[in-house]
Image 1 (cartoon, helix red, strand yellow):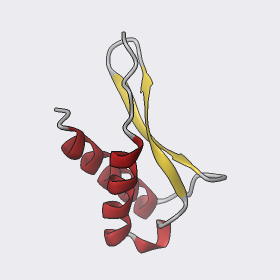
Image 2 (spheres, rainbow, N blue to C red):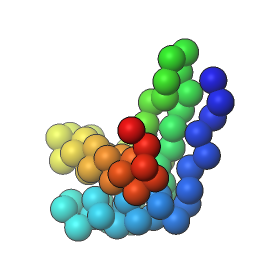
Image 3 (tube, one colour):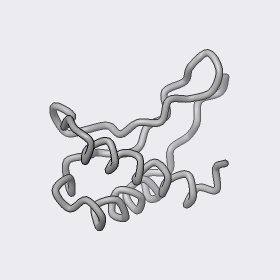
Image 4 (tube, rainbow, N blue to C red):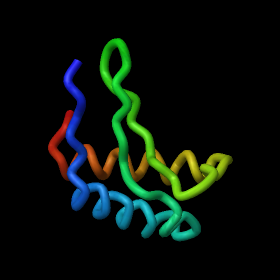
Length: 75
């Protein structure tokens, strides 16, 4: 499976959108990444340091990934 090229500008935009809803995580994520799996990709955030835990961190990650996919026009 071919790796997905992550657009750094769209990644920053997606993180900024997610930070509007979850400001406690602003500046803690470095960007969106897509790790290849046997079938498909695992979409995640790359964090600066230890990733935060808990439901709010999970929601921040999901918001950022949904925003990235929408901005990049990925289904």
